[in-house]
Each structure stands twice: as C-alpha cells, then as structure tokens.
Image (cartoon, rainbow, N blue to C red; front, top):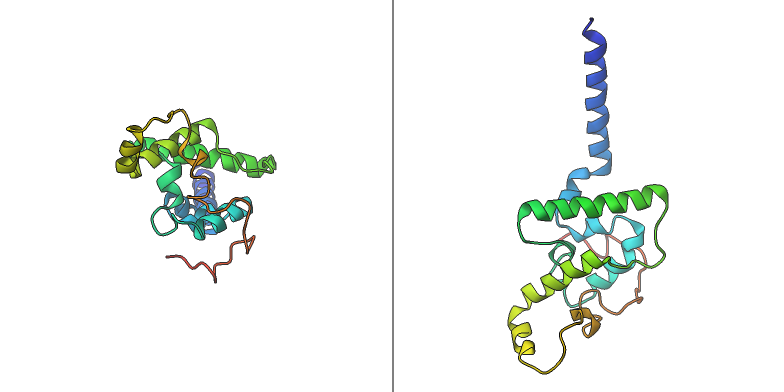
Length: 162
C-alpha cells in the first residue's frame, strides 16, 4: 500500500488543524481572560456589567463560574460549558436571556462562600434561613446593575486586556 496518499492526508489534516487553532485563537479559551468569555456577542452585557461592577478588580469569570476543587474538575467543567456554548452558537439555539443552569448556580454559590468565608461565617450565626443563593440579596455585586450597559458591545479600546 503506497504511503504517499496517507502522508499527504496527514499533512493536510495537521495544516487544517493548525490553521483552525490560529484563526480561532483556540489556546485563549484555556485561559482566564474575561475578554475571551465576551468573544461571543451574547455575552457583551455580562462583560460590560462585570467591567463596571465591584468584582472587576478582584475576580474574573472563571473565578466565579468554574469549580476550583482540582484542575481536572476545573477543565472538565470548562470543556463542558464550552461545548454547550459552541453547540448553541453553531445551531443558532441561543437563549434570548442568558441564565445560569442549576449546576452553574451551585458552582457560583460554592465560590461565593469560598471567597467570602469569613463574612458567611458571621452571617451563619444569624437567624435568617440559608436556603437562598448569595445573589438573591446581593443581586448587583458580580455583574453590576442588571440590564444596564452604556456600551452594549465590547470595545477593546475602552477595556484593554489587563
């Protein structure tokens, strides 16, 4: 069996994959830059609200929206969310209002408690019920005021990569 067609096919596949990685800047999606999360236009409002909100100097998207139990779980969830988003954008099945899934809500809640452990400990000594998510009371903390965005689309001149 001649090897030349196999070598040509393999070379073409490597070149195509390399071109895809270059054009899509695929390695950026393994990182933590919030600008990468806002590459999809449906995330513009979330990015803008985060950029003007109190957590902008303290937390990035991945700090709140991904689990930090161990690197394997972190990247498995990052991949799961990325594939879910890729499927939605590829098929055009994008929800009008972006809402966190139950799994994402649990991850965010765990991360809120982890970062604000001392404050949560003080609250736990109080008399309120603890069957709510943190953002039910602290609604505008992570992303600022909901639905308000002076610039509805990301402008890299206004918000340069840090």
